Structure formats: structure tokens, C-alpha cells
Image 1 (cartoon, one colour):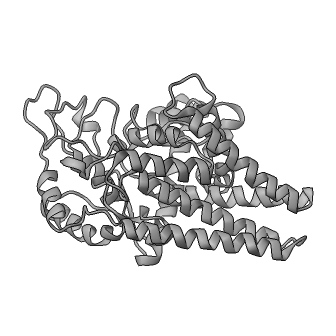
Image 2 (cartoon, helix red, strand yellow):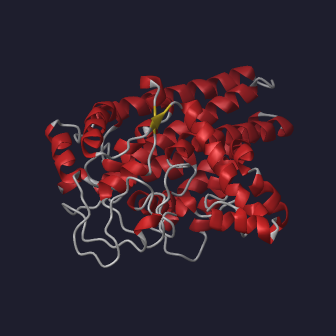
Image 3 (cartoon, one colour):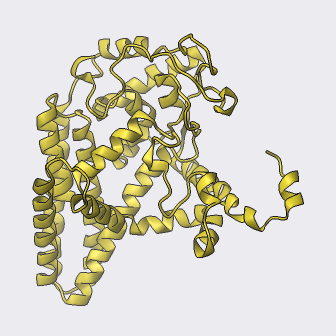
Length: 384
């Protein structure tokens, strides 16, 4: 498939290899796979869809668009910095802090799209620019994120293969919820209601995970480049804030910026897959079905696409990871038609609907944490 697919992209085979499903009854409705022992290939029509999308010119890069986005975000950041200096010793600085949190998230979106080769066809250039944006501007490890994100894109919502659904404060799977004890169990039982409030701490978490990776023992590509960039970024950023503002206000400024950054990042990524079907461990599903059925699009037009950095077209992003943001809307029409023709469920909701689904799903998973307190008879009578 040439350079249409990057290291974070879909499989480069024309059609999935023969697959085996450990237990076909475990698969959510709509998934296509073969039962154990079968020799036929699962049905896949991805190649035909890919050809149609490519022929329409929707896999062409839009470098100019992204340069324009970078310039706009950078000018807004410069305006925020200028506004901060003009405000001086004022608690209105916290409004500036919130705005900077939003802008850092926009830089993160650009880093994400650059890593997917939506901006440049060259992998070397994409990684170089993506690393500067992620590590040098946002303050996150590019190597840590790309490693994690590659696993997710290849196997979204797949138990044992998608690390995005591994336990980390929140249980995304009942098998993790049931293991919780003490305060963690109490939290898990109502984790859906707590999910968005705890995203206020996700900014801190992302930075800590990055540092843990960079200073850990595992292999990290361009480790010292990233350590240098992240260190310089935080030294300059924090140095300016604590030099210009009183200590208490400086701490509040950083806290608000990190809270808004974490909430915005988490709220943009959470609706993508949470509450969508989970693929059992050991199962194999054809590429198109796997990507479409585990993903959710968000309606809302051009503003939503800007606000979510193109993540509102999650289905199309997973099918064509190197597709530039301006092409996603047109591609979505083709994908919807294709899915309708071939009977593949295609999900799209408004943002409030998606958030509601996320909360309900996490609360439903959290019910598993109550089961150790159930009486044996009640457990036996519970519908399975």
C-alpha cells in the first residue's frame, strides 16, 4: 500500500490472513471471524474501500493545512503569554493558564497527526517533527506514546493486546474490576461518575508516565534527545512562571494548566472506544470489522473536528490512519455507505450521548467490584 500507511497504520496486507476465533459465541454481534478449526478467510471488503478512498484523492497529505494550524495555535500561545505579562500579579492569570492548557492539547493533536504521517510522507521527518511537538512543546515522551498508540491502532479494544484498556485507576474490563480491594473497590463501583473528574489529574499522569519511560530500563528510541527536550521544556516553562508570578499564584497557574490539559485530552480520546464492543483475548477479526465496530464517531460538524483534533471521525481515522484531517468528512460518507452495503454497524453519537455511554459503561463494569459481597444464591441467579 506504499506510503499511504505509516508505522501507526493498518496492516499492509491486501486482505487479512486466515483467522481463528477461540469461541465465536464470545464475539459481539457484527464481528466476522472463523470458528475454531475453520479454514476459510473471514469476509473483508477493506481493499475495495481503500481503493475507492485513494482514487478520490483522500489519502493525499495536506501539509499546508497543518502548517496553518501550527501558526494559528502558536500565535494564540504568544497572545496568551503577552496577556499574562500584561495582567501581572492578578488571579485572572488562571484564565490564561486554562487557555494555555487548551493550546497545549492542540499541539498534542498536531503531534498525533504528524506521527500518523498525515502531514509529511517521510517517516523520518514525521518522527522528527512529531518528537519536537510532543516532547519539546507538550512535554510528553514521543517514544512512549507512539509505542502505546501503535498497539492500540492494531488491536483496538482487544483484551491482552490493546494497552488502552488495561487497568490504570479505572477498570475498563470486569475481570479487572472484580480484582479490586479496599478503597479501590469502593471507587470502582461508581467509577463512571468519577471518570471525568479524575481526568483533571490526567495531565500530571501523562507527564509522569513519560518520565517513567524515559528513565526506565526498557528500550526507548531517541531516549536522550527526548530527555533533553522534555527537561528544557519544563525548565523554561516553569522557570518563567515562578520568576514572574508570586509562588502561590505560580503553583495555582501550573495546577490549572495541567488540569485543563488533562481534562481536554481525556475528554477528546475517551468517547472514541469506551463503551464499544470488546474483542475477547485470542480472537481474530477481519481488519475492517475490527476497526469499525470498536470505534465511535462524534457528530458536531467543523467545530467538533477542530475541537477534537479530527478524533471525532474515529472510524475513518482507524481505517485510514494517514488520512489528513480535512479529508475525514468526505471519507466518512464513503465509509457509511460501504458499511450499510455490507451490514457492518457504524456508530456515531453526539458528544453528550457519547459521554453518557462512557459513564454508564464504566459503572456497569464497576458492578463487578461488588460481587465478592454477593451471597452465593444471588450470584447463581444473576443473568449471565
